[in-house]
Amino acid sequence: MAISKLFFAYFHKNEKPFKMLCLPLLPLKNVINQMSFESVWRLSKTSRKMYEKIKNVKKSIYKIVIDNRFEYNIIYPRFKTRILRFEKKSDFVSVYNEMGTNKEITASVYLKFSVDFWIELFYKLDKRGPGKLRSSVYKLNHLKKRLKYLNRFDELFSIKHVDLVIDKYKLFGDSISHPLFQKCDYMEIVGNTSYISNNEMNFVLNNFKLKNGLLTNCLIAEDFDVTAMQQIPRLVIFNAQHITVEDLIKMDCETIKLCYHQFKPRHINQLLHHWLSGEMPKLRRFRLNFYCDTTWIGVVLSGIEHSKWDGQRRAKFFRDGIESIDCGNGFDIERNDGLLATFSSLEDSIDFVVWGNISAL
Image (cartoon, rainbow, N blue to C red; front, side, top):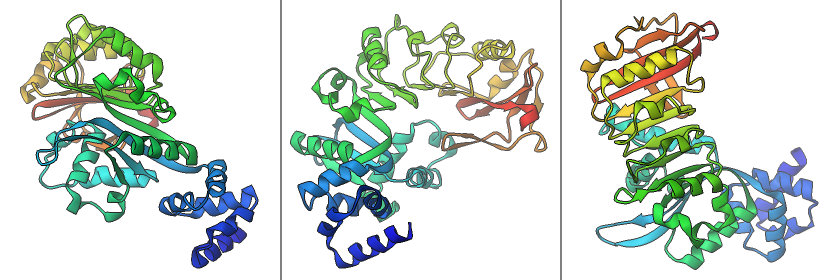
């Protein structure tokens, strides 16, 4: 490792990247992995041979977000693709936390949107973001340039996570034929004026391994088969008006978030009783946004033994990915098998989180 550091210092100081062509693969890999993304990107452009060398190294990147949708800008209305790069997990978390600590955004609003929504807002509020992160956004207005960048990312780097934000109508054509799109493990399907059909959803599930989740703000028809999505670990549906409690209890998701729904407190009570009976073993979080009320608590917890937060029993904050949910004012519910959960109400939203077995907390 010390030798590789000397190589790196020498080449960086003397700016002679062609010398690196003489390095065997292992020393070259050590040098490349210590270089910044920007340095590797520039180095790949010095020669075709250097490009091929870097292809064999495959420097690791935590995540890229491919935002491939129509974005309407009042000043410059146009379609554009953006690639947002996060070299380390800490880069990704810092963007999210930056928005979470924004004093202009209340907690209830903060929890109602997706992670990628906050990333987008962060970059729109340019002055609030660190410059090094702003330099990680690639705006690609032309198809040829987009393809070039996608190829470069795919060939030169080992990308741990690929998030795809895409218009529904672009899902079924050449726009997603690139290999990098096929590596997508989290997807946001947007288009709040268009319906997504059962066939279209089956296409998505058959062509993408969404191990990190799915969000859609498309309209859902009354005959839509929600249970087709029951194996998706993290499911967020904005237009959930036609989803019933009968649909929910069939779900095998870890996280379910629904907005614009038709649930009443009695339905949530039914769901909690279903969970208490030992069902929905994978569930870690259920959230309803909008059309909720703090007065629901009495009906929701009817017939369910519950208690207020005890700091000796569990933590105050529940971690869901990079989200932190304040459960200090929630009501704890313990299942017969020892699983501890908390029901919380915040303005017009409710949260039900499962901590795990109480003996392990």
